[in-house]
Amino acid sequence: MAVSAEHLATIKTLPSLIKYLRDELDWPIEADNFEDLTFDYEPEELGLDAKDAVKIKEIKQLRPFENNQPWGIFWINFEKKRLPVVLLRRILAHLAIKKRPSARRGDRPAWHPHDLLFMSAYGEDLDRAITFAHFWQDPESPGDLAVLKVLGWDGSDTVLHLADAHRTLTEKLQWPEDPSDTKSWRNRWAKAFTLRHLEVISTTQELVEELARLAIAIRKRANTILAREAEKGPMRRLHAAFKTALIHDLSEDDFADVIAQTISYGLLAAKFSRPAGISVQNLLDMVPPTNPFLRELLGMFLNVAGHRDMFDFDELGIQDVVELLNHAQTDAVKVDFGNRTRNEDPVIHFYEHFLTAYDKKKKVQRGVFYTPQPVVSYIVRSIHELLQTEFGIEDGLASTITWGEMADRNTDLKIPDGAKPEDYFVTILDPATGTATFLVEVIEVIFTQLQNKWKKSGPESMPPLPRPGWPV
Image (tube, rainbow, N blue to C red; front, top):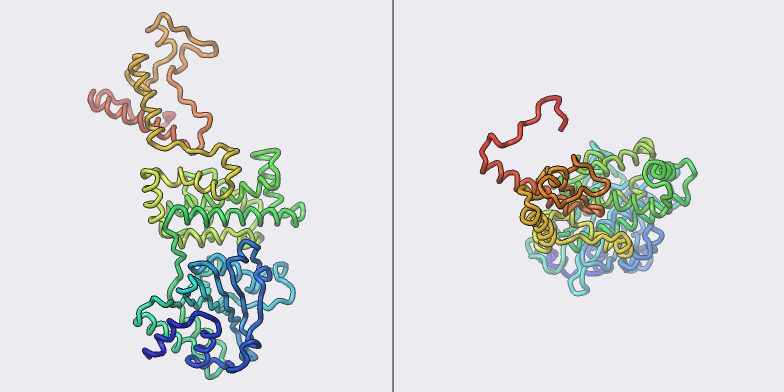
């Protein structure tokens, strides 16, 4: 066992893996026909664009070894340093049997998702890792995203880990004595995969780059759908609804941009508020009630598109975002973000970083530059103190004094045109609200001012609590 286990650490290429499968797992592979053993695929054949294609060295399918073999077995050699879940999921979507006849692609071979086995290599040239991957779908929740489970190793693994991997491979992925019993074959091979793969993203920059990349992909797909869809198709109907309700001159690309940004960033906000994970099954429920705009947008999205089964979430790429966020270590991302920005709220301030990676030109055009919290605090508190010291307004920003009362106090003060004596003298206006950083700080200053005032004056100075029926 030890010799065979340590042998795993030396496997870096497909030929060395094939030799292991033949010699250790009894796969029916002829020793001298390696060139005839596989079909080659181009990344474009599996739905990958040019940007994704450069991340893949080669894609090969192992030719079936049995006439009734249920499994589609693929070898994918990645350039990336870690297993790219999103790319695997995109390949799965292209190879899996489609539920809707209109979504099927010619005579290309297709498999049920649970009948696909991916053997992958990734990592640095001197530290390549090998992973067997299998997508598992919960039969009780067919609408949920299929879960990627893996069995893998690399050269730095301990002998104990390698021995365990070898034991699992020999027990579960041994070639069956009776290949005609496909039910038993499926069950045994599927049981080899018990660990869910985690695409470990733990820093702000990693999450920004991946989320922006998926948002760009959603935007491109939305434009592609619009270009090929009939006038009464779900995306065109949604575009028309947006033009009627929000922006009358909204172009198709700007609409695709709205969809991509809102969904991507909205799901990020949902994940930050739901550490346990989010699900595409109940997309509306995933969005926190504190984000009514996103909830309404997704509600409109689903209502205009009709029943969810009529709209392909996988086609648009929403499931890829859910998968990315569920696999990211958002707690670690929050810590990393806090270290960079002095613990500012990531949901509020993450957007500038996201937009820089997503569309830097649009970021500049829209003036998305948030003011650091220390600067915001200095500006707001300076105004608060100036109102107290220069204008004699004790409550500062919390004051409800009117123009008429100020004019009575100061004979040289004239009420400006357009203002009425009963209008408040202190009015907060933020014409470029953005993430509302200034308004949040103003509220904090007002709260602190009134809290300190009431503590000094005693309970009798506090305003009465609202009664039922009172306007609030």
